[in-house]
Image 1 (cartoon, rainbow, N blue to C red):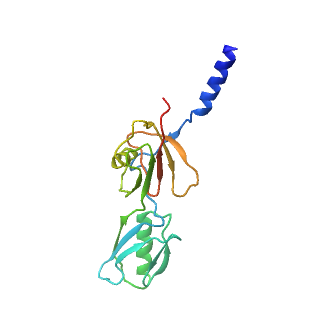
Image 2: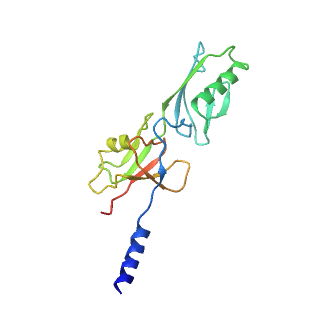
Image 3: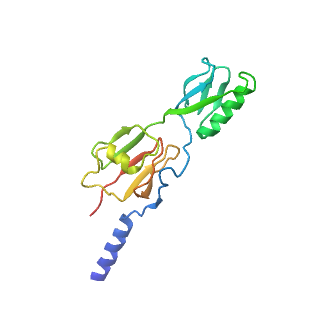
Length: 181
């Protein structure tokens, strides 16, 4: 009878544990891709009418004077810069010299076992630990070795092992779960 109870208890404990997936990529280990909500600043040399701030709309496009609508979502900043330069040079501005930079990315969210859960501004090179620090640190109940993340383009949450350099991405929803022991 005792062996049976031990077997059942171990099966229940095994079912309750959630083994995390692989580690998150390190900070700087990937290029950011643009998405809806990102704000960009475009400067076209000697063309004030074309220069300004633009927001990637819900369809993933930028609406720009003279150019019209251009798909920005899913592209990296260098890719979009090259495409815009080419489009401007085709007819509007001879030998267009442009600079394009991100003014702000879409926010990130942190929930669960942190002191101040909520919405936070993403900054380039942000790690999970930097976000937790912005949120006031872990609570005493926090599981500090596993983080649950739902990326902006995904419908489900995944568990990851946390390392000191684990990166977050704009639009992520991060949940810090409780520890069980």
